[in-house]
Image (cartoon, rainbow, N blue to C red; front, side, top):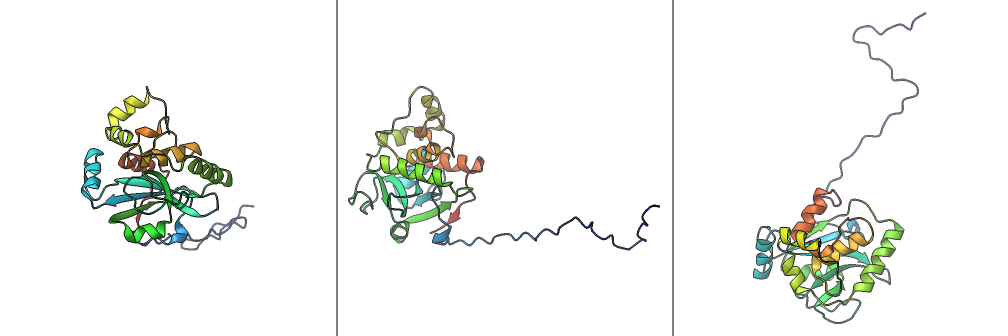
Length: 224
């Protein structure tokens, strides 16, 4: 009438409807990042060895020559190439799109930049690949704002986290001039991945910490 119970020490057979789950294998992450791991929407952080980078870190609550003093974002250009989009005044390589050196928003081949950069480079992988529509919107935004002058005053204002937060409540977002972390924050906000009312309030260290805290990017991996 009732099913017989197993004797002590005898194993119970799994139910017939149960299916064995495959063993989960933890992905091994090396210090060096293979280019295939890069994708649109990923954030690239830079820790320069110059005194300017050190001052930026001091002003943005980071460790000099170790914290993030500059950021860029990976995105597809109009021709489909995956490039690093950044806003800077310190790059002496011509922009891949404009074809000339420029103080402001520009794009470069990451593999060409890495050997020439004096400092550490970190890869913050976005937590998921972008959908095709998001990828296209990111490309459209980056191409529409390429060759925009660098915003030195905006970069200075973003250093004070409390001040930039208060100021963002009274000032509308303005992309007529753009600094590095402003462009990254605006790009991610434009595709709906990162929620912010004013991209200009984010300095490199604050942006990377917040992206990590919100679990929008994985733990950074050192590229150089």
